Image (cartoon, rainbow, N blue to C red; front, top):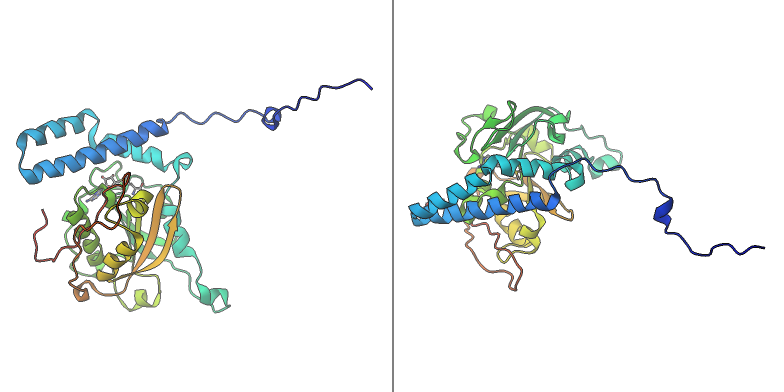
Length: 297
Ligand SMILES: C[S@@+](CC[C@H](N)C(=O)[O-])C[C@H]1O[C@@H](n2cnc3c(N)ncnc32)[C@H](O)[C@@H]1O
């Protein structure tokens, strides 16, 4: 018997070549744009607080040179592609569509439908929450609108609801809170969400409503000097929220919060910047809840 070559080829060599990925901004480049924008934004807020006009001008021109908010949003849209982690609202739709324990035990629960959603920080009108049949009314806002289906509006300046017609069953804040450069303003943003949620008898019966969908970069929760998941729970419960769902992916922290207390009933407990974790290599993500009588810079 003739001796055959015994050298083993790698299994990979038998596979057909994998189709080339579509050309997108390289992941590293995308991350660099996002990180630089966040850093400059924080520096800008610090300069504004200090009233340092030369610094404000210099940072604004650096932001412009990088393409400003539009370039940041373009990088974020790239981050939403499937190859880069996907559309975070898939998780919101999955959580709202999931049947609860009673249904698993054979007790019929009505599926959620006809809901209203306020999506803050919307980059597209084609994401999962925009396509889902759960929602009848979706209002999308962003500081810089990228499409006619998104209103250009700062959530912090959106007029407060005068009636339930201006409130929503669900509010989405996906990768927006970490965009806010100041820790006290982050707290104000969370507090403000409670004012836009609809609390009536029908939503109270639904067990998941009204709710806030909050998504953050995972390091904000697991690697910050000033934040932990327990600390976030504490802040959120002060605002009247209880945690319904949570999930971590390699990069993101997803959470769904039920608003139980009307915003008028919430406690006055405050949260200042306190070091919870020490050590090198941690970030400084922080949320402060100040007394509503204190001015937020
Ligand atoms: C990283 S993008 C996130 C987009 C999308 N929600 C997602 O999950 O991929 C953050 C967006 O939030 C928007 N944003 C930040 N603060 C906002 C505010 N106060 N009101 C409205 N939009 C805001 C920014 O303009 C930006 O487009």
